[in-house]
Image (cartoon, rainbow, N blue to C red):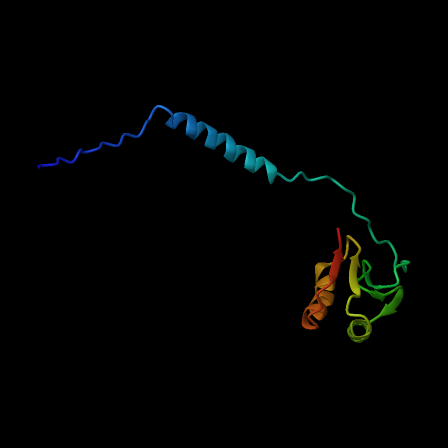
Length: 130
């Protein structure tokens, strides 16, 4: 008995390919809108003078227009700043450091403070500049 195998031909229906492509296009466009981020214009606060805030757990470093450093409202230098950051971290590792600079402060002055924090590998730093 001789059995012949039947040869099957598979056909891909091309009629609906344009519909599938259109649906994929709509799906991709929809996903791209989900990640859309709107920017809101806000006015950043400007530091005219150094002031102490009510936050007890924050270590605030103010830099005025001339580049003078204020640590929690009192005039300071880089060495005192470094020692205070080390002491604050040893007392409470969750202490946040806020660097607040006047908008007319030269970036070199801010950069000195950031380099100290970088060398100390301080991780919770907020920078408030304009």
